[in-house]
Image: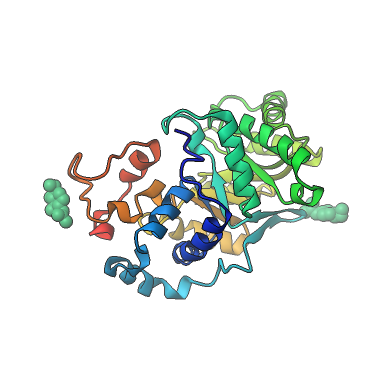
Length: 324
Ligand SMILES: *[C@@H]1O[C@H](CO)[C@@H](O)[C@H](O)[C@H]1NC(C)=O
Ligand SMILES: *[C@@H]1O[C@H](CO)[C@@H](O)[C@H](O)[C@H]1NC(C)=O
C-alpha cells in the first residue's frame, strides 16, 4: 500500500474537506503560520466520512477555548510568505509532508507516489516538505518536478515548492561538506536551487551549527538555496543564530493541541523577529482523529493499531486528559 495515495479521492474531496478541516487547524495556529500534514488525507477522510470531529462535545470544549486564535487559514488565504531581510518564499499554509515515504508505512510504489503528488498539486496543495533522510522523498520530488515541467504550464511550475531538510552528524562543518551535501539534495530533487533548506543540529555543545549556517548562507548567496531555515531548534539557539546575522526564515517544530511547548518561549521570539513557525505533528499522525476518540492509549492494544512510526511517535507525547 502506498501511504501517499491510498486515501486520495480526488480534487473535490480535498477542497471540501479542507474547508472542514482548516478551522480545526486554525485552533492550533497562534504564532504557527504553516503546518506540515504528513497524514493529511487519511485524517481528512476520517473527519469527513464519519461525522465531523468538531461536533463532538469533547472537541467543542477545545474549540470554545480557542476561538480567539481563529484568525487565519480562510479559503482566500491559502498561502503565506516566510521572509527575513531580502529572502522570502511563498508557501502553502498546509504542506504535504513526505516523512511517510521513508519506510514504516508500507511499500512505496514510485509511480503511484508521483501520481499522487501531481494530484495534490493540482488540488492546490503545491508545497512539499522533505528531508535528506526521508528515504526516497527527494528522488520522488525530482521525478514529480520533471513531470510538472513536461505536463503542466509554466505558471503552474512557478507555484510548486520543494522544501527539504539537512540533518548532518555533528562533525566539523567545513565549506566542502556543506556544499557537497546540498549538491546531493539539488541533484536528487533535480533543481538548480533548493526553495528552502531546513537545518537541524543534534549537539548544541558543539557550536559547529553556526559554521554550517554561515556556509549555507554563502550557498544562498550563490543561488543554490533560496531560503535558509531551521528545524527543531530551541529558543536559545534560535536567538544566537539571529544575533549572528544569519537570515533564517522559519523553524519547523512540533506543535498541536496536545503539545504546545513552542508557545512557552519560542513563539514570542518569533513574533519579535518575524521568524515563522512551520509546525508538524499538528494532527499527531492521525491520533487526533475520531478513530481514536474512545481509546485509552495507556492500555496496550485497546484501540486501533498504532501501526505507523508517526502514531508511535505521537503516542509518546500525548496527554490523556485531552482525549478523555
Ligand atoms: C538587501 O538588498 C539590498 C539591495 O540589493 C542590499 O543593499 C541590502 O544590503 C540587502 N539586505 C540584506 C539584509 O542582505
Ligand atoms: C486508562 O488506563 C489506565 C491504565 O489501565 C488507567 O489507569 C486509567 O484510569 C484509564 N483512563 C481512563 C480515562 O479510563
